[in-house]
Amino acid sequence: MTVSTKDNVYSNFVGGQWVESSSGDVIKSINPANTNDIVGYVQNSTKEDLNSAVASAKKAQIQWKKLSGAERGQYLYNVANVMEKRLDEIAECATREMGKTLAETKGETSRGIAILRYYAGEGMRKVGDVIPSTDQEALMFTTRTPLGVVGVITPWNFPIAIPIWKVAPALIYGNTVVIKPATDTAVTCAKIVECFEEAGLPAGVINIVTGSGSVIGQGIADHPDINGITFTGSNGIGKQIGQSALKRGAKYQLEMGGKNPVIVAADADLDLAVEATIAGAFRSTGQKCTATSRVIIESDVYDAFKEKLLAKTEEITIGNGLKDGIWMGPCANKNQLQTVFTYVQKGLDEGASLVFGGEQPNGNEYENGFYIQPTIFENVTSNMAIAQEEVFGPFIALIKVDSIKEGLEVANDVQYGLSASIFTTNIGHMLSFINEMDAGLVRINAESAGVELQAPFGGMKQSSSHSREQGEAAKEFFTSIKTVFVKG
Image 1 (tube, one colour):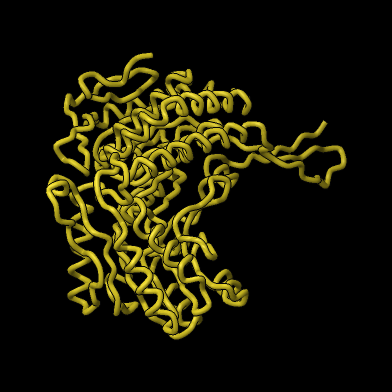
Image 2: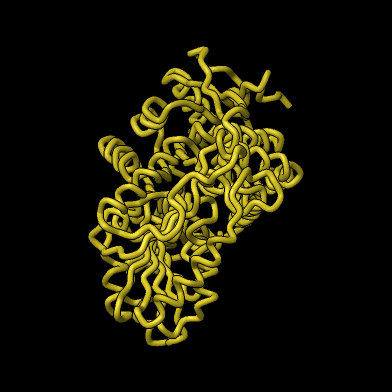
């Protein structure tokens, strides 16, 4: 196998070869827990590099789509087996690049392996239906055809799972891929692509091109030979990509932001609600699109819930995610840390009360990292910026309400609709929540973050382009339906 790196410099993977960018420039990837630790260097690629990757993918797709689903599935099984052998290495790299704890990145790597195996099995499942024809001498049925070349643009917060849950279905349904990972976690993505190479995928079926979003990301959106684009990231960039794709008639899929609520009813198990709120809000340093951002609590239990929440939050250990005993790592980069500090100031300026955190923790071990304490505000009203805008950090706003009806109104009073949860033992409250909550994922007596890999995932309102990822729903995006009419 050709090694992707030399002197800690990772190349692009194009047409089955690891190649340097035509620019000759590289971008440094650093450890957010210790900025003196350089994880590696990745290519600062040009449109010429992207064009080469797209041409390679387009050529490879001719033969790749001719393989049976079972044959393509076998390749994905092989990738899963390779990745399983390299689980610890990939997880450690992801922790060094992104900052979340090693336990979390190991879990994420395991999830990536499970996704590969799930979609490998998709190669043996049906792709169409027989439809009755009005002509008794005819046979009519549907089948599915791949889009062609798919551009994959992924964020830094799930550097293993998100690339795989986009690439695996794209490949099993007969597409080839050009992936542009977030630069902050591009070394991790290169290691994932190494697994595809080691598994023996034909040259050109998967390609990675690293570089800036303005050049490579926008280049994917604009490229005439890229037939579909799947993107996870911010709303602003997502809409820009969608508009570019729409102009040239390419299919696009956007998964974007969230301002996810948890409703705590007066009859809730408060210990369970607190545990899930902390996990949903502060795991991965709150850098999940499904992270808990608002906690809407019935007034009868507000004080009791708050007391338990603060006590549990005080137990959180902050530090380098590679170290034992650390529960929460740093923000993934300097810009994200600054964004959280900006929202702390916004909360104070708007008249909310800071009841926990909001500062960099004290100690020499935190000086070279992008650390912030878990942050909790109360006396928050729904019109405040901290109750409306996505922070993407360990930050929650407590909002007191007098009823579940009011709680649902507050929960829906945002532009986003990704995930939401409620804690209650009342079946009526559960049904009201299921029926009235404007979110693509609703969870009862469970944290807002997380969805099982076999289930559809996506948001409502401004959280997505209204398509769904994962599970069988993925084929709706990565294929087109072809209706066949046969008459003897």
